[in-house]
Length: 374
Image (cartoon, rainbow, N blue to C red):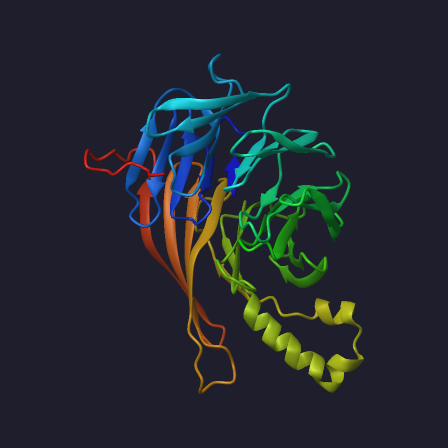
């Protein structure tokens, strides 16, 4: 997942992690930089002008980059497939309108424009499908890189929060989900393509849907007052993710524990009260299970977050699930990298510990830094 900024006030124009969160890239007015997520080491930089999109393909030498239009040679309508090893462009694709988002995996290249989305075979660059979309001014999309659950999510309405789910490998529409009453502001798919989480422009409710059944699984209240949701992230998992996090214009980070909610819902539905309450009302009674880190960064600053790791420990002596520990990485568009360890115990009590913080714009490329590899 990537985010790019439409505000000229930020020194960072875009930020993205690769498909397994082992590296991340930022685009600035001077060029782009790639960092090792585990060490924070600057691995690669290229100072050739402003970039609005920088997407990696795992830890390979292939990048998909789009200029910000501040230099004539870096048009926002041109996608360049760039080789970091040779420093040369491999291929270029030109479009009639600005490119708003790009997503890649080992089989597909996705290019999102305002009213069209193109799906390419990433090896041959043949166009496989063209999706006509509602006006998508922000290039909002979500993509699951897994080849087994390779779905693309796009807004399906400009008046309400409807989501189109498209099967990118089989090239057909999978379903449409009515997630919110207000238009969408943010969404992300789990890495396995099984779940999607969404937030509307209202920013008070975050919902999780099961993709295969197109059914709502969870509703979480982020807060009472409206706020702009900047990013959402599921924890890595082969099934239901344990943790979901969100960053917003309030400057806070909200974390929700999905597994604990499922356990409590199962117990409630098996009770007498749960058996007589309609499902829609029962869902509204779900406890929030919010774990909030206040003032993680200044209010109003755009941010991008991912859950890089989740360690879960089950205590056989307890009826509840055990504790889980998540590594939550945050990039602020003012140029900082923050990494927290979130620990939630079996009593649903939590703590946040700041593990790392550094300036992304002043980091230097070490002479011994290994290059990205194929």
